[in-house]
Length: 237
Length: 84
Image 1 (spheres, each protein chain N blue to C red):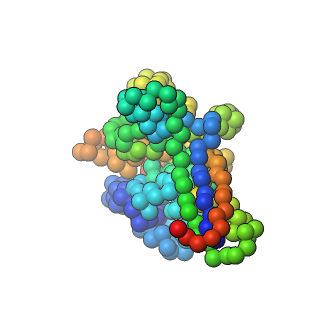
Image 2: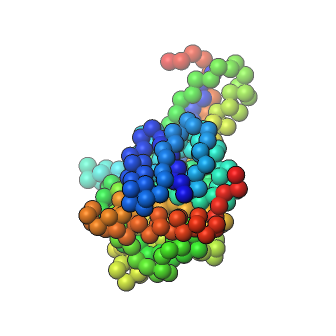
Image 3: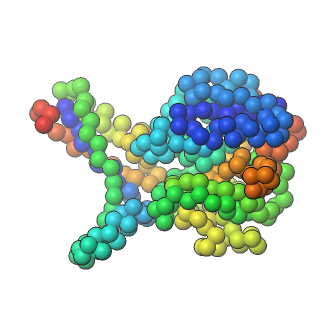
């Protein structure tokens, strides 16, 4: 199966995502430039981390209008699995593919550290190889990961089980101390209503080998392989 | 024509940067400053002589790109005359 990794000017986790898919998982991966008009037959699309267009205006605000995003929207609308990591999550929010928006971290500091996140939903193409309640140790690296949505939107997210990952302690409890950026409801990651589009601030692609401190992120990519091999969440192309 | 676009966080949205600026002003002794809300300001030079067209364009641009309606609101002012 094939992963497409979209490259925006300013992406910096594109190679990490490519490496995880191609070299750790042994799947096919291909970089897609943001000005391309084709996803080149990919089964899964990754919008990687970084600082697309320098984060000017707002994070993801300019990237969402890149030509490739029209293709990503079509791919997602037809059921294809899309994963937005960090800046990729911010692009999905700006594009309206996921609800809500990002604010500057509550501490007003760029936070770069390993955090614990709990997998709350396993019926998405990026968590279906996880156990419900599994706590993953994965790094974050962002200045604007303070997730915000109006209270009625948050209530809707809870009702629809769209909060996929939450910042928690080691016991899986979403405490204030475990929340690194002030996100409402300790949200670390979300899915859309049809569950094929997932965004998260932590970087699973930077936690795929024990040699770099954690291999807990690998399950996110293994989930995508499982979803595609089972024919679940396939784009109609 | 020139349009000025002011983008501000909605009142319900916490502004971590504004809070930091408020704290800094208090440190400097400006205790009378009760709150600061940080926003963005844009000047658009628009190739149009029709105020209605210019305003419509500026409002469309502000809604589509310059602001994020989830967390921000905007206000447009038209300025006549030459660029200062």
